[in-house]
Image 1 (spheres, rainbow, N blue to C red):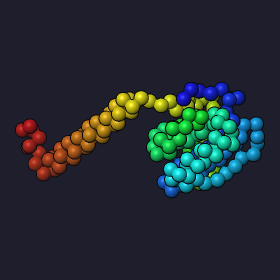
Image 2 (cartoon, one colour; image 1 turned 180 degrees about the horizontal axis):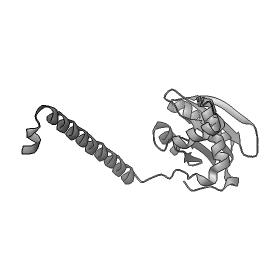
Image 3 (cartoon, one colour; image 1 turned 135 degrees about the vertical axis):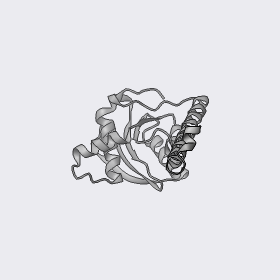
Image 4 (cartoon, rainbow, N blue to C red; image 1 turned 60 degrees about the vertical axis):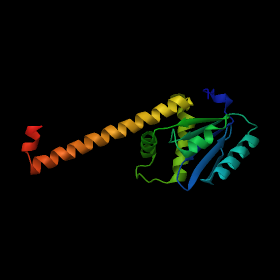
Amino acid sequence: MKQETPEEFAAFVGLDWADVKHDVCLQAAGSEHREHFSLEHTPEAIDAWVCSLRQRFEGKPIAICLELNKGPIVFALRKYPFLVLFPVNPLTLARYREAFTPSRAKDDPTDAALQLELLRTHRDKLQPLTPQSPAMRALEQLVEHRRRVVGDKVRLTNRLTSTLKNYFPHALQWW
């Protein structure tokens, strides 16, 4: 996916992901009206929604802001070439929310609206999600697995050392 210029987007979407449903805030380019709705977390519902977007905006590019750069919703949306995904760090969104909501109240529809606002006002600072090759995705998964295994090894070694210090400190001196 290449980075689109601002004039090329037909619509902007803030999507707050959840396990059961996704809250969506949509704004067409050149309009101030925002649409808020929920989307079920099923492949059929997501596909029907994307097809309705394609038909409504005549296949023109649509910018979508979300807090993920991988996961089921990202995988489902990446197969549509007219969607440009802009992942946002969850901490960035949390701090953006805190700037305008001192009470720190949080709900999913509001987060979707904040993602849309962040996309509309600070798109120049956001990078679109670029698909990686299958080999790179596989390598990334292997690296993450290795990192977990090394972390497990360090954790277990530290626990064993601590236990030996408490019950049998001479064993550490011997080895």
